[in-house]
Structure formats: structure tokens, C-alpha cells
Length: 255
Image (cartoon, rainbow, N blue to C red; front, side, top):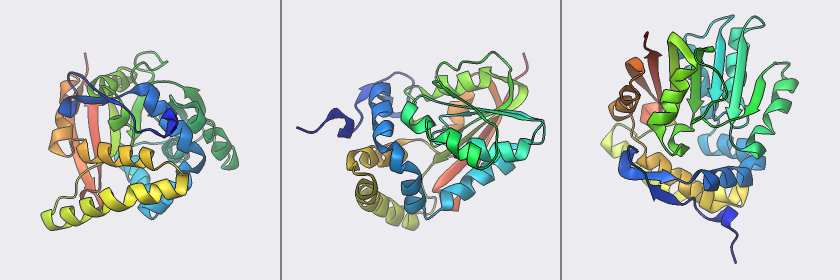
């Protein structure tokens, strides 16, 4: 019998979520725990290393500067948190949370090897363990589509950011040009789960990740989610690599 760890995450109906379907948090946690050991290598292979450039683009676009306080949500193995730490410098602060212990366990060693001080903690983007207005900005990379209620998650991120600060999202999208979109979608649907399964031994996880990528709103449709929080103003976005990924930014409204 196949273990539940290797089963695709269960989707349940959820009000307020795009498409009306939400991933089950326990299944998502279990899935990421199963692939944590090979997660970094697999990301690099599947994206040909481009995902590092996307994270650097987010940090540049964020306006982060020395001395700022940053929270990275769904940090995984900590790559985006590390990129922010290099920018905010010794006078700044970076905290990072993830709700999967196996993923988070790999992050502190990466930070130590690079001589970077980051405060890692287990935490859920739907209930962050920080007070209101503690940070200048909060980020999430390739994680919002795995949150059962993305609007609530974005609102919770904005709660811990000071008024005028930024909430930033990096997420997969859909390629803009129709001809290239058909080519990319066909390759992604057929090849990425096979390759991800070969590299990690868990094809079901990458079948889910590909489905969730294809189903997540992008561009102007995702910007509408930022507006629905009731907390974020001046939402904007940028397409990366022809629309394979997108950056989003909203400013936390003043009371």
C-alpha cells in the first residue's frame, strides 16, 4: 500500500479561495517533509538555476535597505531570507518562518555557512507569532498557493508590517504569449512531475505542485487578492521570464 506521504495533497472546498479549492495543511506539511532533503537540488535542476535570480529580483524590487526589519514567510530552506539578510546588513533584522519542520531544519546550517544571522522559527502564515507592525516588510516566495486561504495569509502578513511597509510575493504564473504558453504548459505538465519524481522519489508531490502552479491566479487577477485583504494599497506586479514567475507588491495602509 502506498503511504499517505506519497499521495497528492487532498483538496477541499474553501470559500474565498480562487477556484474554490484549498490544499489540506496537514497533507502539504507532510508532502514538503517528504521532499525536504532533495528540495534545493531539485529546484535548481527544474528551473536551471533561474529561481535564485527571481529571488534576487524580489529583494531588489522590495526596496530593502541596511537596517530594515524583514520577515520571510514559508521560508522553506531559507534562500529568500538569506538574500534579504545580505542587504539589510548587521544593523538590520531578518526573521523567517515555515510550518514544515523538515524544511526549516535545513535553513540554519545554510545561514551559518554564510555567516548570516537569521531568526528561524516554526510558524504558519495564517497565524504569525509576531506582534503588529514589527517589520518593515514581509515576503513569501512560491508559498502563497499552498496556503488554504491566500487572502487571509496576505492579510496576516500585512498585520505584522508597519503602515507604509511592503508585503511582497514571488509566485509562479502563466506565460503571456499564447504560443509560448501552450509550449510551456505542455512541457510543465508532462516533464516537471516526472523529473521532480525522479530526483526526489515523490512524483505525486510534483504533480500537486504543477497543478497548483497552473491553477493560481497571476498578474492582475492576483493583484485582486491583495486588494481583498482590505489592508494593502497601491498593489502592483512585474512578470519575470516571460510570465513563468511574477513579483507582487502592496503597501500596508495607514490607519
